[in-house]
Image 1 (cartoon, helix red, strand yellow):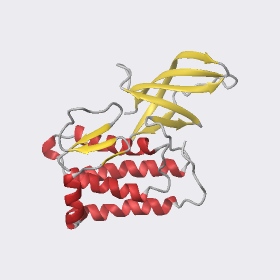
Image 2 (cartoon, one colour):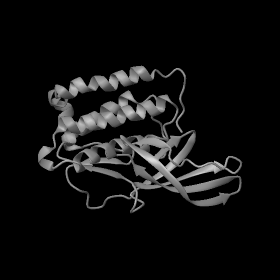
Image 3 (cartoon, helix red, strand yellow):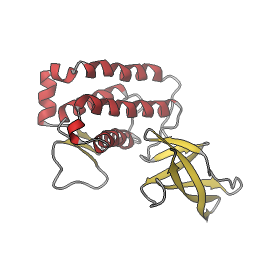
Image 4 (cartoon, one colour):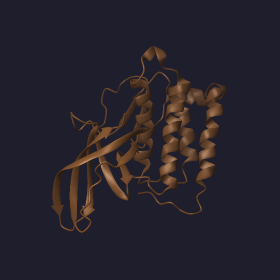
Length: 219
């Protein structure tokens, strides 16, 4: 979990991120020709996030690849968010931070036909994820693990697509003395609401008990 220093002004960070929406509407990336040429020649690549126009012949495991014709626009935005969010993004959570931005871009493109893709909506999708990350950081709930959420002060690892009957599998640990489960608790993940199912497997581990459960998307 990332630190949440009291002197960090998250309201100001949110305002800066929301302010970039006006820059996107005005296609600011096209006005800065030098930056556009830079990102066209060498799109963003860092913290295990790679933006590219075509699939890589030798993709690296655990990297997030965003293949899009809008490499200039997306690279410009990610670089902007890097500067705005630098106060709370650190060596522990940077892969999760940039990976989630990449996930948001890929979700946008996978949920629409390519003929309906456009750079503005792509950037807005990434901004929405950035704002969710900022809210988590403000609450002290930003995890350095990419697919992890906090439910009732318990960290839960999510494995999307890990079940053929549910949205995925969840793993979490409770103390032996507590012995409770998170069944039927609701939580948000990647912009959607889910419900935790009943524990399907309990595995004692010294002073803790590992719970494994399915989680379901709420209609």
